Image 1 (cartoon, rainbow, N blue to C red):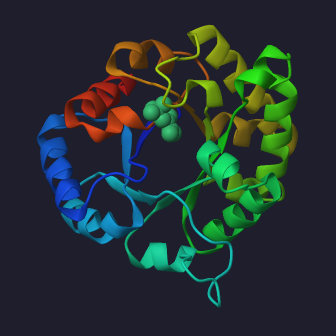
Image 2 (tube, protein in one colour; image 1 turned 90 degrees about the vertical axis):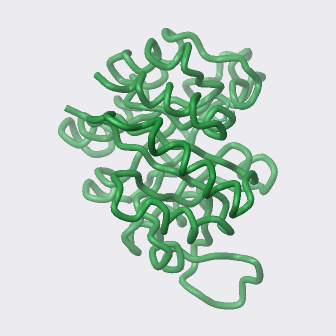
Length: 252
Ligand code: PEP
């Protein structure tokens, strides 16, 4: 059985002091929760402080992006090895904000995923269609291309260490959530694509998160769908009560 995974993507929010305060509130809010993997993804500047605060707990640490190269003349960038050194076990790759605002392609996301895996990080690879693509009936084609391109040549072992996040772009930060049927349909498609790429046992083991305006009120229903294995949470991860409410919704 796949263990649900809920990750909080704090985006460009929280100073170091605010990050420490949020972790201090989250720890009691999550007390007694078991059977769900929880990962916090603060901005780079707060990784060390959040990592220190999480030391000795079950909560994992993740970054929101990284560069594909190991080192070199890439001003302003951070490598997978540097993230490992800070205690990260996960890294979000190909978030729609990175794809849209920073022009990241499937090819680049794939390069980053390979570099992350080589450094011992688990990538959380985001895919999802825009509203225009959904309305044009292109959801399946878009997601198929993103999964094929972003996850190419990771191998069975790499895929098993990868999490896929289906995040319809029209649902991110908009308050508009995919219906459970819409989300489940795309998650089932992604699992079929994984099956074609790496076979049934890999496809059955890879966790596929849903992301897009997930809240305590809709989390349980979404995550009770057969192919939805947790959530990638933006806005609602910035407040301990709402994030903990979502995590509790993932408990089977
Ligand atoms: C996200 O940015 O990954 C996300 C899902 O954001 P939100 O929960 O705010 O829609």
